[in-house]
Image 1: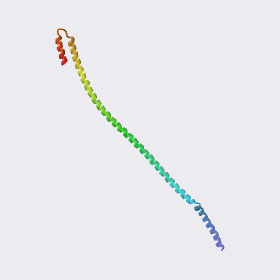
Image 2 (image 1 turned 30 degrees about the vertical axis):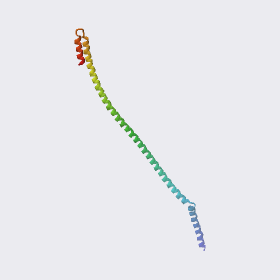
Image 3 (image 1 turned 90 degrees about the vertical axis):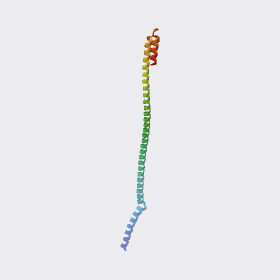
Image 4 (image 1 turned 60 degrees about the vertical axis):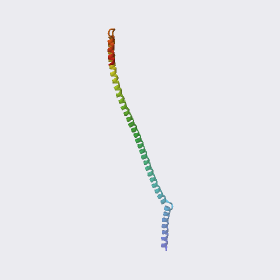
Length: 148
């Protein structure tokens, strides 16, 4: 019986120790706390990754918007330049036609001036040579030259 009691006493102590350790571990919430902390850490990492991905997406969206804005500005400038080029080309063609027309008119006027200057010089010579005896003859010559 002594031996039985010793075994029981030792067994009881051993059982008490295991029970005490398990109570500390499970009763104190150490494992639950560790598991909870690990889950919270994973959740925080997932949230951080999601926020980082969202930030990258927002940055990419901003870059895309900036590129689109620059593209629209460039397109507007190109359209303006093409419109201005067409307008100035049309004005240039019209101006060249007007210059050619004016050049023709100036040439005609120069020819007319030369012809009239020649006629005036001839009439001036006739008038210079007029006297009482040849007045009728010089009148006829002047009329002939003026009419020619």
